[in-house]
Image (cartoon, rainbow, N blue to C red; front, top):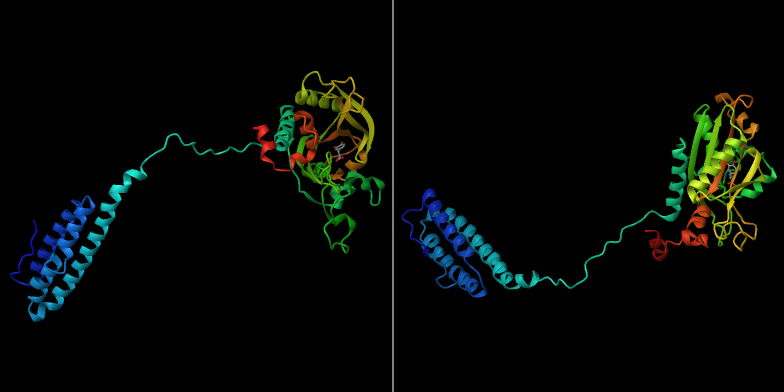
Length: 365
Ligand code: DAH
């Protein structure tokens, strides 16, 4: 058991040795403390005002030191006071902690675990990726374009002349304060992915075989089948000798790949400014299989996409880049992703796809 020695001399080395012995004793006694009672004894032995080790140090070392050495001894004694206080404080933490540490280590294995729900691909995005993959397997590349477009790309270069009534079918949001710009430079939220046809042909000469997924905007009031923001997948093929047969075969294959081999397709005459001839493409009604029901309005067919042969007027806008209407021909198509998702999964209200309701979304997990 450590006792405070009287110092034979107060030189630096002999003070250092005395301090070293004391600190070693402090440390070994501190580690030996296990419970509350131990700790109290430890504290009193070192810190008791009467005859505690520190007070002995004060008497035997500091008070006994000759004048010239007082300062030196005083500094070391101050340091020792601090060390002892710290040792007592940290031993207290351990002493009281040791009784409650078992409690904190208790584990109730009957409690339910922490569930971390995994996110899933949103049904719209999943459908979009499925469509894109069908065309990738046919050798198509995949592209994207800006959602903020100029009037030129969204309308003019797709053969919607300024003030043409066909523009009324695709009203959108125009960026404000552009009255001083020429009409073709005014910015708007794109109403379809078709402008990316032009961007693509500006970037690469024929042949082209590309699909373009993306978000589009329309001035539409939300209801069960309309949303002011929705998604499309656009397709464009340009090469020499492309015919309407290629278009029919391609889309027929794509619909069978998406909905099953028994799916039939039917092409109805239609109009789009950027295709000639144009068609609306319908597929066998998913609900009744073609016999006629409320969903297909007794027709047996559901209209799913627009398509057609690229209008020669469109090539005029990219003629410099190798698109000579006398030499190349091509087809284009565009489909609404939500419509296809609704058909695939039997969703009867498009708004469900935008609600973010987990109870709806987790059905697609
Ligand atoms: N852009 C048209 C729309 O949003 C859809 C469309 C129709 C795209 C015919 C095409 C096409 O590429 O050939 O209504």
